[in-house]
Length: 475
Image 1 (cartoon, rainbow, N blue to C red):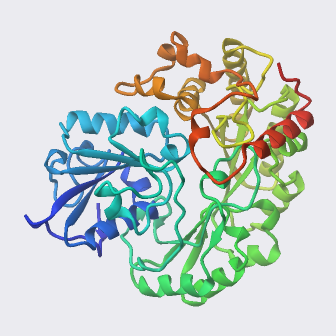
Image 2: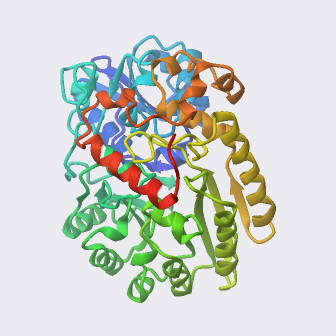
Image 3: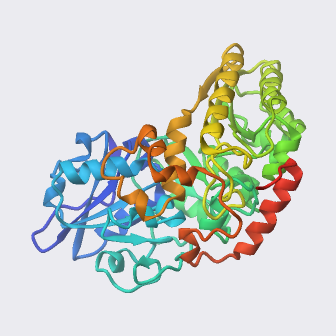
């Protein structure tokens, strides 16, 4: 692990040691600017000193900086980016014989903290910029449960202009968050709700961060859930290129990719797009807002791209096998444009705070849990048998995403099972299977107790609208 780390400081006996735990691989953790900001804030204080822990660095039990054992730290801040990360977190704390205070945050905690309430001492709902010391010291601030159930929202400031530079998910690059939140209304996506309102960093601020890190890397990865929605996106890219950097956006929307943008981002080798589904009807159901024409046009315009990566979902409400065939036909059309194609397909996880939060896992309210699971398995087999003939194909496990659904939609009962690996076989034999089923519209969810800044009635209207488009009758 070779990195430039401007925030590292040596431990003094006058300081308390804080373990910053990312319960997954280093390459993902170092890409997370939120974690870098927390690390920066802690190591800017006189009272505390932070070191980082990753699952693939000393098995998560010793720090990346000094190989200090986690048991020698007084507080552990744990970031749960993905539902299954909680199993790694529990393992690290148990095997490391950690006896200090544990505080968990991150998107999985923001969406639904209640499955984790028995695992960690404190849970933080929201964005931690400028209050990290208050979180460690257990002060009664907004977002820190059990004192507050209101999501905390932070400003995008310039207090951390330097950053740790290393080989990350984008290669060796400088990471610049140009926006947070998303102005789009995709019905399956949780980003809009847990990171609203959408906020943008100005082009001048982006240039200032780039200048601060000049000479440390030749590439800049611009980070945002929807970078091309930034009102100054083209100006930002041009300014960074004029400064001598190559630029890689974290994602692109096909409907925003035109000739000018293709020329601006001409050095793209892999074009990544998320059609979500192959049929126009289901794209309307999920409110994706792009067409097949947009997708094919983007592929044609990306002349320098050698490879196209496409993301799809299945298990959507109102989904038919003809919709799966539409995925296959779309992949064939992209391949016909002379590109190498890889495809990633996941079953839909009905997330809290989204219009799809009432759906069963499997997408069909008319089926019970077992029937939906079996149908998902048939659809998975159907897709694999056809797609692997024409593209590199990765179709996720039905059982694994069932576990993700349980953790994301569960309550305190789920927490009782998180001290060991929550397997699919254990789920179907327990009351936890209820969280995979259709949830009535008058259902009181655990996360309804959080103040997220939106009205549930709006989600109900969106859900009913989607079911009408999908021609799905509710029980």
